[in-house]
Image (cartoon, rainbow over all chains, first blue to last red; front, side, top):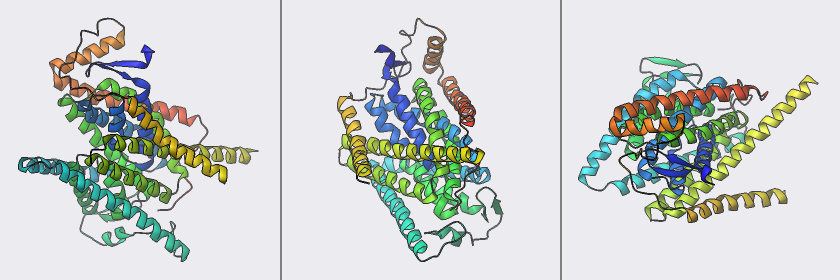
Length: 339
Length: 103
């Protein structure tokens, strides 16, 4: 059974490589479906495989960059990536992440901020989950009342108010299908960047709902555009973590191979899923992430890892089901049309 | 409907039990190794030579190592993207448009 273990030249250990492929596959599937990097899912998986945690974040970051590249290419074919919006947001995100990271370093000098950061994260995730479920509830109520617009019933429409801000330059985002002040996405990405930098995360968990509720992106465009951003910030992250010697390149390649397959499944599944289906699954993932952080805070590390990995397994199976069912249905329709 | 419920419950239980079992069998994460050990990378083909080169770069020049890591990740990501595109194009699925148009 020695062939199942691969030597990692930097970390100097042998790792069960099918486990790495599996983690890559799961994160690729979920990331491609929700439009996020998914660093919060990878770390407990790597820990279980006996991966040195010092290398986990850097390895994860590089793998996410490569995986987002595969997903972005697929989403781009569907027309789900608004490059102009993504590039504007990258500027705000980068500046925000740097300020957020500096803020944490400053607070660290004053005392131990670990607990404060974790609780801020928990509150933020609770707010996002509440927002997602409230939005769904509101949309359902509107649908029942017959208040259905061009693109179906909508719950929260804060972006409509924000689009009334007319500070030049006004920019039209073709793929996303709206015009707004360029300052709006820049400012929102700056704020989400500060939060991401402060919390030490990639930020997809915060950016995706911000794109939908505050900027007004249709869910699928939000997913694709966010992945484009994750790709750029992930490559930057891979470089800085490599400079710190915190990356295991062989593991990155092995995980990436699994992620490339998963990314296809997750991305194609968005074609068959309704926007609200994606949002609700996203809300559940956010809730589980929140509970796992609370468990970790109270030193239930194993329970947190089980919760995260269990959630990953179930959501992954749900996405694969959507993709397979949708693909079978489409191919049957095609055949019937040809007959 | 009943069978579906049983499948869902079984799936949820399995989803949470499996990681638990895996976790119970796993070791704790080991300590950080600051220097990559190239002594074990003596024999083998191109793959071992590649690993040897990367480990050497990690030990001797971290900037070269960082540049290689970033460039290789981007190249491999792009390669996989094109390869998957090639494979997916042969599935017969329409991968350029979607019918659902809601927000």
